[in-house]
Amino acid sequence: MLQIWDVNWYLDVEQCPCDVHFVEWLEANSVQAKTIFHFGTGGHHHIGLANHAKGCPNDILGITASPQEFDAFVKLAIEHAELSRHYQVLFGDIYLLNPKLLPHIDIATLFHLCEFRGDSQDAYGGLTDEGVLDTTLQTMPKGGIVSIFTGSFAGDKATDIAMSAVAAGKLERLADYKSLQFYEKLS
Ligand SMILES: C[S@@+](CC[C@H](N)C(=O)[O-])C[C@H]1O[C@@H](n2cnc3c(N)ncnc32)[C@H](O)[C@@H]1O
Image (cartoon, rainbow, N blue to C red):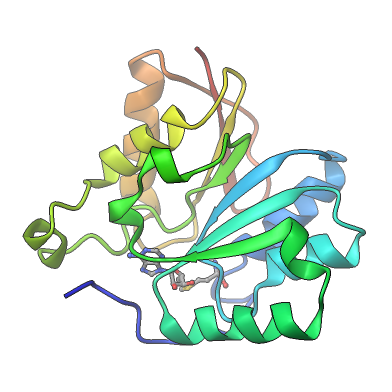
């Protein structure tokens, strides 16, 4: 059985400000015409809806393992006919990420890296957390950006993985923004 997330996560900026901070970072850096992969949409779909409200400067592909959050996306896509042109959501387990099914990605939010890998993924050959980062990097050109959320309970572990990629010459650390770290793909 697939490991799902049996919760419909509402926006809670006190507990989990990553999506709000990311939208602010996009705005502060005037990010446009980028393809963004977003790990963990929440049922609120804040990143997709904020992009829609700003006239769709970017194209965003989210992933959720929550059937309820996926249903919420379907409802939003029906209500707002234009939404799904620039915001789409995959249903599945990030640990089954397959680069052949992904677009070329310019920016990836791996905010929940290291939060959800359990033993259940071993039964179906799931990636490790390091594998999720490596697979994401495979979809990116040189200069691609990966963001990590320091406010996650697994933020230290995710930082260790990203810093190992820095030590291996795969990534360069950029300036942090609020609760988020940013890394650039080097080659
Ligand atoms: C705590 S919620 C945070 C949502 C949103 N990023 C926020 O900060 O409000 C965790 C998110 O990760 C997603 N998630 C949990 N396990 C996952 C998995 N194995 N693969 C993909 N997404 C997963 C959930 O569906 C949910 O959207």
